[in-house]
Length: 370
Image 1: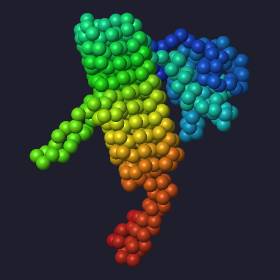
Image 2: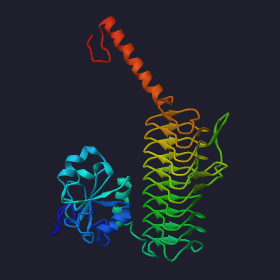
Image 3: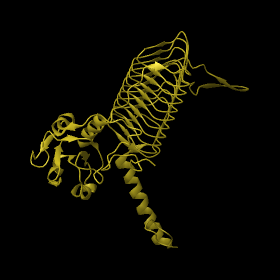
């Protein structure tokens, strides 16, 4: 064990173990307020001068006087009252709860402000330009000199890798694949038949561009249908670890700009996601379904193929969606139905269960015994 703390953090409990996360130079309170789009309230120059330098971020219960924390949930008001943070990002309704020893950085969107502040202290590591000696890069590939190709990565013939992109160890970039600028391709990612935009992150183990699940029934079994489409991933997309996106059969599979796919998500062939969609862990979207902009699909939901989900619709966890969903709708259950209808049905079943239990003396929804 070194002389540093056991968890590698700085004294005072700052987030971001220095062994794993780079930290930028200190920032003044005024600079942090401008970065967060927040106002300093009250302007307590006697407590926290505007030119004091903050060293990093930390949770409320661990923060020190030179660290920034945040509160976005009233459940943690007790921790706010006892925090040692020098500044706390809060919504206007909590500004008067910040202790006198700290400055309040007040904003209508504290979590967004926290993301910006934390990201400023701990930016994503830059690519280290160059190709590792153990990487296998085809002579016909085009790798920008500002890109990094890590150990044992493979880049196929005709592939193009943009400036500032990092291809991590053991990743495989197939022939003809195009990867834009400032992308992060995680370890053991396989990427084929795909065109990838700028600032895209593919977390370790993601599989992009493999054959879609397409076959025809013949008298003696199945005949695989050639999958002749591509995967188009637009700018600023993140794809979680071990997620899979099949290439299209005849059309392209499209992941719209700004979308976020969680770990273990499955996207079938010809699916089209609009801008800024969210698909949460273990959800699956079957082939040729179309999602509008800002759709949310919660964990373990399943969508059958060839349906349309309107923009800003929300699909609940473990939902089974078997038909189109209107724009802005909230659905849950299997088969999917509007939230109010689902919970009305649940309440009705509970009432019926209790009535039946009362008649026969059996167990009811309230836990009665036979």
